[in-house]
Length: 137
Length: 154
Image 1: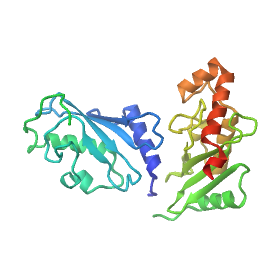
Image 2: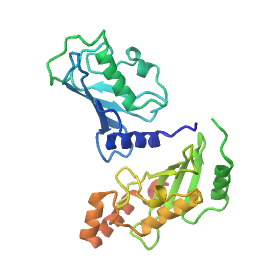
Image 3: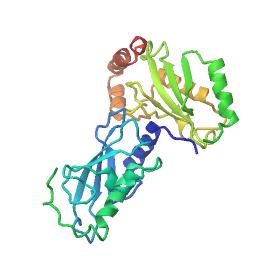
C-alpha cells in the first residue's frame, strides 16, 4: 500500500462526508468551504440511545494540521459534555482516548467521531449525569 | 513501501527528460507517487501569464484508475472549485490506462483554454460566466494576476 498524501486523504474524507456515504449517527465537514488547506472541520455526534445522551446533538471542532494523518487530529467538544476523556475546556485528551492515543494513519475523522460515540454509550459512561442540553464550553 | 511500478518510473523519467512546454511535474522525495506540478496558463486564455501550482497523486490502482489532481493556486474557473478540485471527464469516467500523467496535465492545460460553464463544478462561477462572460473573463484575469503571478512564487 502506498502512502496517500494528507491533502488527498482529506479530499476523500470530505467527499465521503459531503455525499453522506458514512455512518448516519455522525457528520463532519469543512468549517469554511474555501479553506484550501483543509485544516478546520466541524463535526456532530448524535447522542446514542439508551444513554443520558439520547436525543442530544453534540458539536465538535476538529483540527487537521500539517502532521495529519501521521499524527491524530485535535478534537474539541463545543457542546458541554461529561465524559472521562474530555477535559473541563472540552478538549478530548489524547492520553485518555484510545483512538487518538494509539492513532493509525488509516484512521479518519469518522473513526474518531464513531469511537467517541461508542465511548458515550459504554456501560461505564452511559449513565453519567450530563450538563443542561444546549450548554457550551 | 512497495517498489514503484516500472510504468510510473518510465513516465517520471520522461516527464523530466522530455518535459511538455509550460508544464513541470516533479515527484516528491518522500513519496514518488506524489508530484509537485506547475502549469502555465495558455497564452490565448484569461489565465495567460499565470503560473499555477497543482499536486498530483498516483493511487495504488494506477494506471487502472486515474491520477488524483488538484489546484493549489486559487483560480476563477467554472470547472475548478474553491478547493482546487477539477471537473474533467478524463479524470473520471473517461479515464483509460492508455492515458498518462503528461496527457492528463495537457488536458488540464487545455481546460484552462476552454472553460465549460455548461458542466460546472463551481456553480457560482459558472453562473457568472453565463450571465456576463466578459466580466467573468476579467475576473479570471485579475485572479490570475493576484494569485498566480510567476514572480510571486519565486
